[in-house]
Image (cartoon, rainbow, N blue to C red):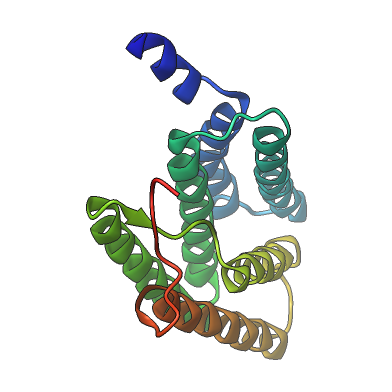
Length: 192
C-alpha cells in the first residue's frame, strides 16, 4: 500500500517535466557561457523558452488530471528557482549591473526557503505562490530572456531592466514577508 502511494506521488508527468527543467539548466549554462555567435544566444534562449513552456504545462496537467502531489509542490518551485538563479547568475557575469538583482534574488529566495522550512516543520505552509511572486517570476523570465536573445543591447536598456527587476523582486519579497509575519498571515495548517 505504501509503495503504491509512493509511486503515485512521485511518478507523475508534472514531476518528470520539473526534472526535465532541472536537466536543462546545465545545458543552458554550457551554451550561454560558451556563446560566441548570435545563433548560440538564440539556442540558449530557445532552451529557456522550452523550460518556461514545460513550467506552464506541468501545472495545467497536474490540475487537469489530478496529479497534484506533495513532491510536485516541492519539485516545481525548486526547478523554477534554480532556473531563475542560474539565468540571473549567468547574465550577471556578462552584465555587472545585474549583480544587485542577483543578490536581491538570493536574499528573497533564501528568506522564503528558510521561513518555509521552519513553517513546514510546524506543519504549516503557504497555500501556494502569491500573485506578487507569480508576477515577479514572469517579469524576471521575460526581461532576462530578452537579455539572452539580444546580447548587444545598450547599457541604458540593461540598466532599465535591472531597475524593473529590482522593483518586482522587492515588491514580491515584501509581500512574502507580510504573508508569513503580517497581521493577516496567509500561512495555513498543511491539513487544510
